[in-house]
Amino acid sequence: MSAPGSEPAVTGGVPLAAGVAARREPSEWVLVLLLVVAAVLPYLNSLANGYALDDVFIIQLNDRVHRLADLRGLWLTPYWPYLGSEAGLYRPLTIFLFAVQWAVGGGAPWLFHSVN
Image (cartoon, rainbow, N blue to C red; front, side, top):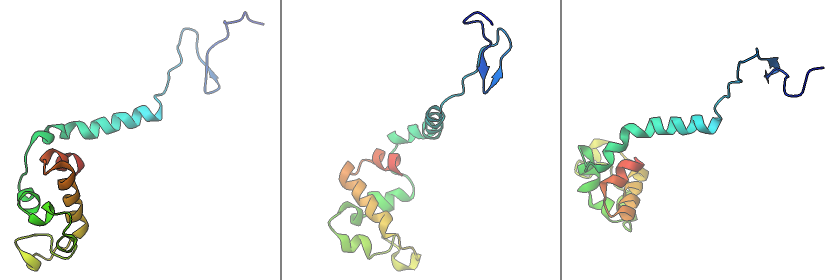
């Protein structure tokens, strides 16, 4: 019988050689946290930007998005406010969520960048 504390380290049922430390696997939450950081980090610089490209017409200059109480205008009109039904796009949930973000953030572009 060996002295207490002199038993070889065991990992996964396999004894380790003398002087070899057991390697600890990172827990799942650490891996998930690293994945989230890797996904979010490249886009942090966009939070300080203003509206760009189609955001100007769909959000910044679109009166429907600025009036959350106008449910008829939000749910029953085409996506592009200036092209009418010719554009063929109908995205009422998207426009509604833009209106909610406008109401919550007071039209601040950073909120749209962080959510969308």
